[in-house]
Length: 181
Image (cartoon, rainbow, N blue to C red; front, top):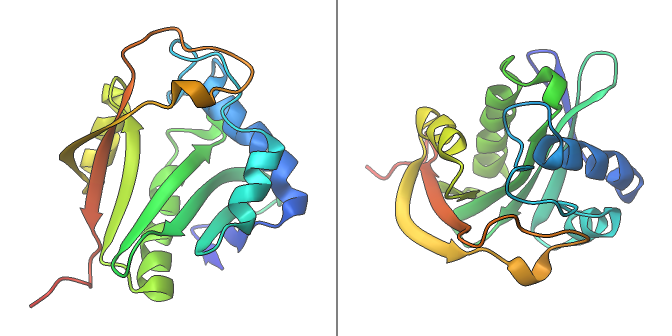
């Protein structure tokens, strides 16, 4: 399926290495505005973790390419309840950030969740110290729920946290076309 020149498909285990590299560069690299490299030095996820997400029930990992077939973005989308979907592992190639790809992916994800699971709400978790990222999601219609979740320090893979005050802010968006009358 196409969305402004982007091609979306469900990832397979064969895609895990490419997805892991993209997620690592977006979250732990030094390019792009979504980096967390000043907070964490671990591997954001390994290839086995990506495969586990691909195989998880009620979950898809989307593999998004440009018109040349190059991987430009990915994300995990999961059904959490009858009306709630979750967006995670959302990454855009750092060299292609700030060009609208993220907005197009988010629009596709919202539509996918409505069509596939009849979700009425979409939830994300964002490191609370990432003010610019929280603000980006607010501009996309998400609101902070006030819920905070602990950061999983014990799950860091091959690295460490550079600060001890990390937590997740939970954000939620009501999906258009699913409002109750």
